[in-house]
Length: 89
Image (cartoon, rainbow, N blue to C red; front, side, top):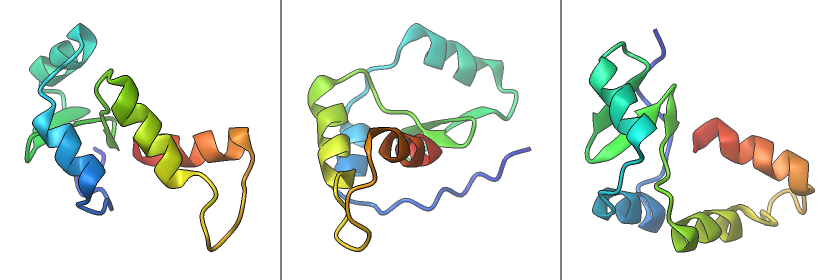
């Protein structure tokens, strides 16, 4: 079973995810299965150990902006950045 603790800073993005109660059908079904692969904690849905980001264009764009060009490592390139994002979201 996957660990339920995700290292995620409680910042603006997490707060926006908590306020957005939109769930796609597949997410609702995954939560209802209660198989340990999907759960909800503090109004944030986790699917296979990653934070579920609602289908909200502004929220998704904000996540991309926030993780683009990290000051400590520079530009990663499109594919590497997406891989790093997929580890959390």
